[in-house]
Image (cartoon, rainbow, N blue to C red; front, top):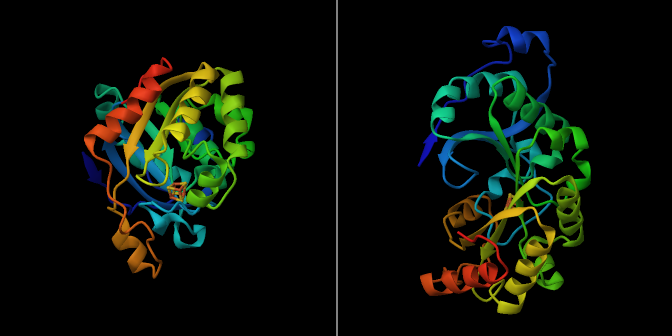
Length: 267
Ligand code: SF4
């Protein structure tokens, strides 16, 4: 379920006394926000999509988030005030708040303030959805305000990772190790793309690595789809996976089985 919300708040709207006491006029570049269930962490969640991403994933279904300058300058106050409207509903649904993108760590101060206020002002469970490529920008203070990291490991094979994302894999692995050292709860996310990431050896590599960390409580195997293709066309970009099929149920089940063979919970 995804419910589109309006974005017509201003920076000075509806500050709670607690917000006023800690008020800092942080702004960031924001694409949108939604309520979603089932894909951005546990339960129903208030998901904020920040603009800007250093990766260029071939299957990205939100290429309209890639450029920070295309987002809308929005205050943290406005977003927290919007999320506050749904706090009771979210808590009843066992959910929380997720910072996504784009790549939220491209705006670490803004992301950090949102996470802090979601957690301490609204009392929500917090999740950070990231590729990990900019993990060095996440301060320990930011990570203290994160209950769950949704970490995309898009490939184990270095060349495939570079082909898929345009960037090297190493920073993501380094960030994964740091999260493990901190004992941070992680869900690994892996997009299964026929002919690109579906080599069993590639999946095996991600699975063995994830299992070795000790802090990965779940793996989401996400079947490739082409729902974002129209956005690529609208942006004048070539969607090179136009002829790539989505994986069938058997392929998805086989990929999950590889993760499960390493003792991981794959969904
Ligand atoms: S990291 Fe996410 S937002 Fe960035 S290009 Fe990849 S899929 Fe798109």
